[in-house]
Length: 290
Length: 290
DNA sequence: GGGAAATGTCTTATAAGGTAGACAGGTATC
DNA sequence: GATACCTGTCTACCTTATAAGACATTTCCC
Image (cartoon, rainbow over all chains, first blue to last red; front, side, top):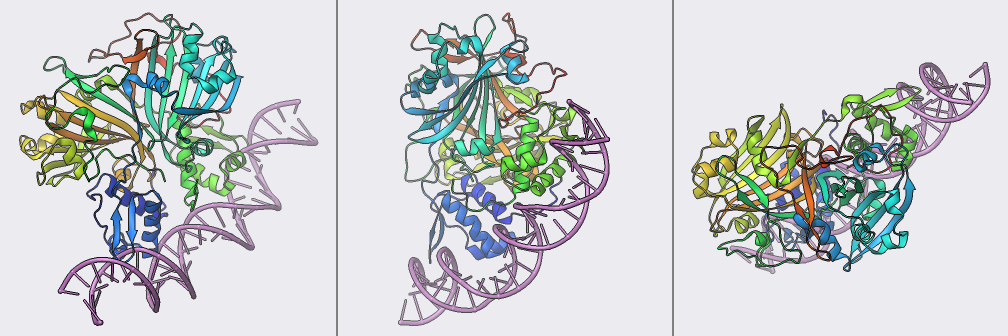
């Protein structure tokens, strides 16, 4: 993993400045150093700096004022959809009306080894694979690849899938859904995903893999989801439990309909990570995509 | 998709392929598509694909056999550390002995507005900022930027921070830690983070922002963490609860010492998402990485 | 008003990255 | 053995990124 080559200075400057804006010391509304200063600081030409600034401007992170300077945009942090982790799925169920779905693919296939094993399928057993894109206000934010055992998949139609959440379809079909296991990672957008989510190839994505079982331990759904981190992120509240020496965090399970805090709070509560809209900006930045 | 400029294709292809090998559908031992296929798939020339493959070969991830093809190296899939989400922090506490820490930065600074607001600091109040990198077996996997109110930060030393988890230090200092709130997203590695984590610039990262409060609602820690997704990921088990019509998922709180499944299971349990590798090979995996 | 400093817009030149194609040689399959 | 497909290698050409300036225009401050 030797980095060898040293190209793409503009991108490097872009990422560097973006980091400084998002997490670093640069406050919203403050002025960046002049283009010549930045160029000198990083040892590149002014053209290169300008290219980086161009990208930042497209991202909406900066405001360039001729004669004055370049300023950090006030509202530079776009609010992503926030999914409460203890409630991910019903969250989507509730969103069913506010979001729309595009069904990109629907077929019965021989699943990959990983999927077959996760669902507990025997060799040669087929699965229904669907690829969907969810949009909110017309803007795509998630790319979902689901696998369902064939015998379960046939209980609903392609049209059903395009209009209802998959989990709802399963339960409508009498499938009892009891347990699930999921893991969260990050990855890059490949060509097809990038196109479906209106992103550049190589943009960062949140990835979630989930397997859902019925009470008998039979896998009923395998989901591989990719989310645009600027439009979707996971959130959870935790409470400290356990005796000293064996303390740990437990997630707070909220009622499915989001309610205000039951607890009193002095300064800033867990809910108010993004506190009252002062004339300033807030901490919990979300990254933009290239 | 405003593509504008699109440089550094080789590196991008490299990262995408690497992602597919490490987390995606490409099984060890399986053959990659031909160089021409890859070139067509990503819309680049064969030379560019070869450059990416060259780097992958240097990384030891692939094995190129003239006449046959390019194959995924058998031992290429590194098992990432899996953090149970309901237990993230104590997980780190337990890991305290197995991992090492490099303290990159330690200072008292005027925090950014976002951090100040999250911690409930008044104007002008300073915070201790530390930047640490955690390594496991000498390999870095996380980049941690923490802010602690100055009056709390002074209760431990710089050396303490380099040797003990921050949360442990806080509790040792008598701080009662009760609630936390965190959100998870994804981003790209900037120059400094890339170097600290031994990554290429532009590699995908898991990002976690957490704020911890004491019982009075006073913020005691603000954490901004970046994780290498190939070495660290979040995992959680969920159970379905609630009456029909208001069903939702609840996280399963496990004992802090990881125990085996209490439940019987027929086919595949939640633990075995990545089951035994069979001697078979899966040929064409289209989807991008996990 | 004048001047300093900032961005916006050019130009010219060089370096680096990427494209297109051809060809050699290996490997597997029928 | 014939064939198809693969990697390895090379050449020539094109496009893009970067550098180093010059110059105009705007804004702000004295």
